[in-house]
Structure formats: structure tokens, C-alpha cells
Length: 399
Image 1: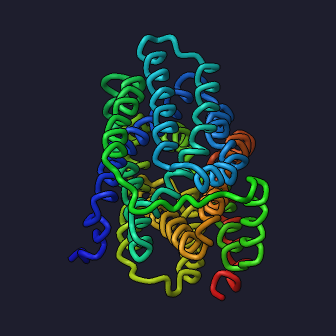
Image 2: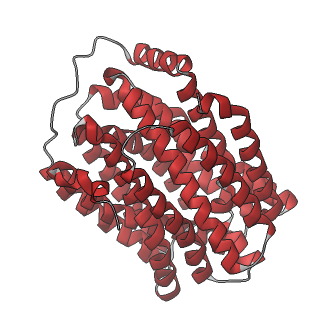
């Protein structure tokens, strides 16, 4: 039986509106995230260019997110989300138009991916900060878990739907659905009334807030260890994700249906992880949970890279999805619950930087490493580095 406490934040109207609006939008996001690499690889047959597109869509998170967090601390987060979500809708619509009309070229994708990366650096940080405006602090851990549930329901269902759409209609219609899905977010935001005005009168400059937040993270050894591990995992465990079209076509000899199967396997494990986190009632042993999940993550990435049985691969990918989400969600929870209120947005910006900011480096590195030594060897090396880093940080994580 599923513990009803898992869904307790849905009793709050604000969060309920946010939850269902995001479910529709994130589904569209996963359609685009599945279709775009497939389109790029179909056009270019290049693992390096796959890595480059992923790099451009995420590298700005590394630089911008902490400063975006300062905006989230200073300005009305609801209004900021209207702006960022509108920009995201625009890029999806443009991508859909160019693809459906057969005008899409590689340079179009590179420019749109760059724009997407800049907007996402702001949007992700603001959305994470916005959760505290929707629920009381005692519901925060549950709300963060349910927030991951939204993302991973999309991860589970989106790629499977994308595979069907790509096969029957083409990649452009995945982008079109993503553009339309943002309407649900606008409707939800229009009806949300934040529970309190947490934006205080600002007496510190962006630079002072940035330095104060950085100083807080440096002094908290447990948080700094969590963020370092998250960053390393972001670099190396992205290899299976970014190289998935290569695995599907070159290693397994499958079509877009195989891509949907493998991506949905990751989503299945990730969805189970969100239920685990949402049902967790306290922060006890968070460090140990993060440590164990990271070691297992590295191990199953190595196993995925070294076997070629489809069903066994799906099983290992599901475990990797579970471990990735447990580590990310529990780190997010711990950071949000321990960050000073006036610096929360900026500190969450550092979390987003660790979680996603280093991923584009891994994408670029993984694409080039795959070209040099093959996708299986590159992925296995990434798993080994994850295990080694976790063992190095284990004492700080479990302190």
C-alpha cells in the first residue's frame, strides 16, 4: 500500500495547482528532450555533435544559476516564472515550425539550444525557490519529493510517447506538443496565491549575497560534500543519457522504439525513487542514503556499459534512475531545509549549478571520449569515477 502521507502536499491548493500544471508541461519537456538528440543524430550521425548540443543547452546553468537565485530572492518569483516559461514556450514553437516545415538546420539547433540553456538557468532555480512560497516548511520535504515525481513521471511516460510520435509523424510534433503544454503552467500560475511574501527588503548587493551564500556552503562540510558529489555525478553519469542514441543504434541495432524503452527504464526507477523520498518523514541518515545511492549508481552504470542484453540493460538503467533521483532529491531537501531564508534562492542556485551545471561538461567530454574509445568504455569509466569520488567523500557525507 502507498502511504497517503506521500501525497499530503496535494491537500494545499497552491501546490496542487502547481503540481498538475507542471505534470503537463514536463511531459512536453521530455518529448522534446527525447526527440532533439534523435533528430541531431539522424541529421549528423555524430556523437560529438550530440554532446555539443547537450553542452550548449546546459552550460549556462554552471555560470548563471547562483545569480539567478539572487533574482529569486529579490523579485516576485511568480512573475519571474511567467517570463521564463513564456521564453521556453517560444523556443519550442520555433523548433517545431522549423522541423515540421523541413527547414531545420544544425545551426538552428545550436542557436536554439543556447537560448534554451540561458533561460533554463533562470527558470530551474526560480522554480525550485518557488516551492517555499507554496507550502509551509513542515511540508517542504514532501513537496520536493512530489516535485521530483512530476519530473520522473514525465521521464517514464514522455520518451515512450515520443518514440511513437517520432515514428509516425516526426520529431517536429514532439516540439509542437511541448510548446502547447506551457499553457497549463500559465493557467496554474494565474490561480496561485503565494502563502506569504518571503521577499524581504534587500540591503545587500548581488555580489554580497553571492559571497555570503558561498561562505555558508564552504563552512557546512556536509553540504559542500553533497554538492561536490552531485557535480561529479552530473559529469560522468550523463554518459549513458547523452550517448543513448549511439547505444540504441550502434550497440543494440534498434530504432526509436529502443530509445523510448531505455529512457523509460530510467524513468521507471526514478519514479519509484520519488515515491521513496516523498514518503520519507524526516532527514535522518540523509548522508548515508546519498552515499549508498551514489556507490550503487556508479556500479550499475559500469554494468550497463559492459553487457549487451536488452532486458538486463533496462534493469540496470532502472536502478540508475532510482539512485540518481534519491541522491538529487535528498541533497535538494537538505540544502533547502538548512539554508538561511534570505539566501535560500542563491544557495539553491548553487545546488542547480552542481546538479545540472556540470552536466554539459560531461556531455561534451562523453561525446568526444565515445568517439575516441567507444560508448561502452567511456560510460564504464564514468561509473568508476563516481564510485571513487563517493568513497573519498563518504566520511563527510555520513558525519
